[in-house]
Length: 623
Image 1 (tube, rainbow, N blue to C red):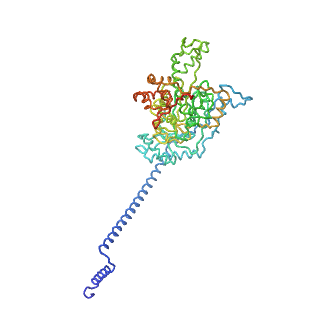
Image 2 (tube, helix red, strand yellow):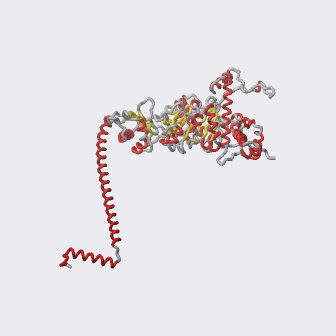
Image 3 (cartoon, helix red, strand yellow):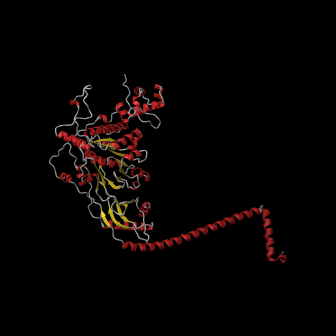
């Protein structure tokens, strides 16, 4: 075939016959072969396309990084020149040693004989004392502050916190406190504070710290505050706050020692001026320690005749160390039904005091006590105006007791959430009544909870308790529930708190004072050695039916079936609306009112999750 088809034609014909022979030999279909080749070709095209795209992307990234590096270098060159031209900030160190009062100096003088005088305050030496570090900041600490200041300015500039002409933020002052360091930053013109506030997480990440808090308003200054945690945290002990001159000079028996502020100065507050305090924080944030510090402050300021305590401890652990303290009105309450009775007794005591103050034409407990003490000093004590002479009942003039000085009452609840969960919404109403009216009657509350949710810190409670203290919480939503603003989620724990006093909305950062269990035991023992405790049994006793119903203004007790319904519920031990309805053949609404009146009287509990009620009143004596 070569002479006829030449080399090319012969090769083509030979290849054709070879392929036909191969196809017949191995039974190969040409259509399948073409399909396989087509798929392989398409896959090859996709592979080439992928490699090309990745190579192009890598090339673009390399170019972008090169430009960023160049821009970064140019930025740093300009930045360094601007940093050098900035004025040096004033660097301050918080006071490590608080000035002591005269009492501490007198206690340091040795006594030959130790005397236990009733009513005398405990010695400050019963509390642990921290070794004060009065040394100036080292060159290393100053260098670290300078590096941190430059890093802060650099990061703010990187996040576009600059003026219209490229002006940088300026650090005007640096305050190194016991726990955090605050940089007072003057922002460039045209920069809003909210812009910096939204960068707190980015700044914390960039500076390599756990959290940063932005103080948007510093009273009397045009700067904002940037608070950064210290690498080495100082401890704040209750002993050094109690020993301070400020605490000694405080006149109120209800002076509370919180701890130190960022400048190292003691933070004190008069509970009578608040007049109630709400405390919230997660487990381990320092909430219970703060409550103990406040109670210890009262023990160092007031004797049992001036202040009485009602302690409610659902956890049965935190406040048990105060058992048999002379200041207590009743034993530490751990049973939640007794807690409800205790709060109800406080409400009744408040109403009783209002009647006495109204009869004496005074406006508060201080005026009442002054008038009573003056009358006693003049030799003409005042008779109780709420008790009238009644010959039919055998009450004569000599039977009416003289008025005496009334103590202030402090109610401390360690876990409000558990109390409300067990007793129910009735507690919320009792707390609201005390919060609304108890100030003038000298009754104050310290309410603590580790669950700052809206079902515990309700709107009714928040509306009547304006002073709040927030420790570290889980989220910004919890912070808003407690403080009505964010910030508590950025706290460091272990006593780090934000405090909003009565009449202000600007939070104050306080480093809470620590008090150990051994210190509490020593102080309580000192008081028990001086005086004996006198409990009032009626504080935790179930109120009488008539008294409980009278306070709520409910006319259900006037129902002709009320006494019979009470007897039926107590005997059958069933607090069921339907059972009362069937027994006395009355309507549902009438039966429901009877059961609700029994609940108000403390005879039955509030309805629990499964719809049942517990009969709290004791049953009839067995024959």
